[in-house]
Image (cartoon, rainbow, N blue to C red; front, side, top):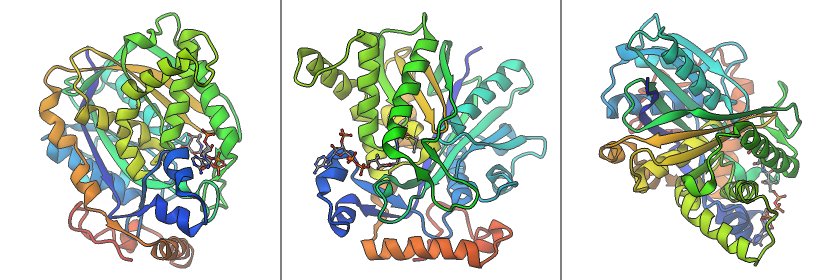
Length: 398
Ligand code: CAA
């Protein structure tokens, strides 16, 4: 049985900021954000854009653009670390908005940015078990990355959702189930306790934890782990673009069994490897920012839209969720996937966002926090989510 992706779609917010504007407002050299972190822009969520709203819109696009009927969905899982309720899952709002069948399994998964990858594994197992009964799984990675204004993490925010349909009739990529590496380790690198509206992070330590987890997953994937030269593309969780470069460096060092020194011949080989296998697929991430659970899959979308892949080439995926859990896995393109490039491509939507000034952005962030505490919100419907879920029709308030 072949299991893989039959649909993938993205939805982000209607507003963004330029990181060069943020740098200027914070009296920081813009190159720190653009070259040091590799980021260009950041999507900013304005009411009523919350995680439910992003998830619904991404899912609607996935079903409509890939011609999949709601009745075909038998499992719905939303991976998120920015849900709207401690008890009620984002998934149940999506279930209603999409008109999914009442016998559809529906729940939310959480392990920081690893939540959606965990859901994809569960969907694969569900399909293989035979319980799917010719139905498909809808997996949504939806998040709003929110840190305190003026914090070091502020330039690594973002907002968006990636919706994926997993089935036993995949049209885009299929999973190579022979190779998998897993790692779980309790660390305090990034967390959001119940009392906090914004995530807390020990930023530099989180980078170390991420890279350590990558090494462990590669080791766990042995002896089937392919050599780097056999991989056409290497995709990683992307909290900011430079992190993917650090990850590919660690992957390269692991593969070559060496420690890279800058300006050495090995370094030049690494640079070339990074520029062909990873960097070309980071453009959307650089323009959207960190979308936590969806960041890895946003990079996959760029590969599917802009790469010239041939069937069965090997592509690696590394998912990291702080706290921490990680997985290394492989996928392969399916013949004919190119015909869906225009269904996947989010370029027009990215270009259609409205640029905010930094003072507008700051006002929005403050309003967003106040509205959550003061409105004593009971149901997202109270927040305007009964207005159309359409990705073109629903103007956010600023
Ligand atoms: N020109 C060019 N580059 C510059 C520069 C300039 N003028 N000034 C600084 N830089 C470079 C630095 O050298 C550094 O690059 P290297 O890492 O390659 O050395 C880079 O810009 C960043 O500079 P700092 O390390 O000084 O930045 P910082 O301490 O202010 O903050 C951060 C960086 C720790 C990543 C912070 O943004 C943060 O905490 N982000 C949130 C946490 C995070 O994203 N962690 C990632 C791993 S955990 C994970 O992946 C899960 C998740 O999604 C959160």
